Image 1 (cartoon, rainbow, N blue to C red):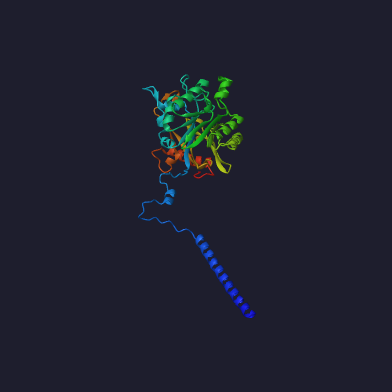
Image 2 (image 1 turned 30 degrees about the horizontal axis):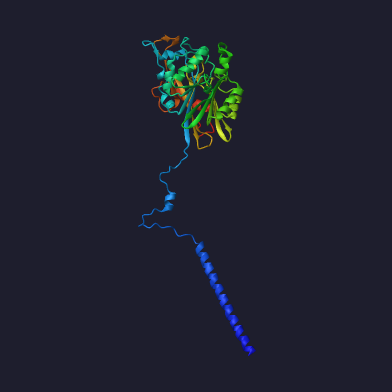
Length: 425
């Protein structure tokens, strides 16, 4: 009896154990099935084509009224050339005897369209303009006010007055020269009548361009002005002042151009003093240095700062004058260049010089026959031309002039030796 009872208990225990295992297996399967469903990605929401309800997800993601912001690069074409040196021969050419008036416009006819194409076009005006003094040339330059009209019509936006001839009509002549240009809508450098004149800043296609100009001296004419006028109104080369001005310009601009007036006249290479100072200007923060004074083109140089190429042109030479082979025995004085510097600014990045192109110029002088004189000068017609326009066509130019023009193009390009920039020639 005891043996049968034990057998029954063993059988019941086995059955209960099997039932318990089966329940555990079923619970485990259910648990695993629920986890698998939870881990699967959601099915995409499909809009019922018959429903009037907008899909809220699509509406949140797309807003057709919100403008798309595109950070476009800002670009500007800067044109710069050297001396506008108005000898009596030039204003004799511009003078009309019958009306007793001057018109210089024809002297720029062949270059006007290109000068006007610049977003910022700059020149060095060397001399004074004052109605209180007689018209004159070397060594005391004083041109007719009508000359300003031709400069404006040619396309210039800014002229530098920081040069050794700005005091040729004394302090009042410096002020009147500035006033004539400013009244015509042309900004000036080198004569300060208000604090903002020291650093000229122009917005050029959204790029803030700062311009500064300085000169080595005033041919002794500084003796005609007071010390107060000299230091407050003029901009002589004083290195600590230049450094301070450049550092101040960095705070209010994107790019800095400096126009120093120094060097040795008719010397084809820069002096060591030029090299040292112009390099310092770049080191202090200038991006472009356009030199003047030697009356001939001097070479360029590419200098790196902060991983970017900066440009120095030691001298741009004469743009228009009566200096030439026949008058000063130097063929380089009738040659010049318009520098085309294309700059770009992308977002918050610093301005870069994208390309540099040289456009050599030549001054044509045609003597009028029979021999006539005005203002002490023999009458002749003057005009500035781009040498590149005559490389493949004589355009009616005589053989001697054509030879000089073509030599101008190749020799100026070679002497400038622009390197380190796209388009450098």
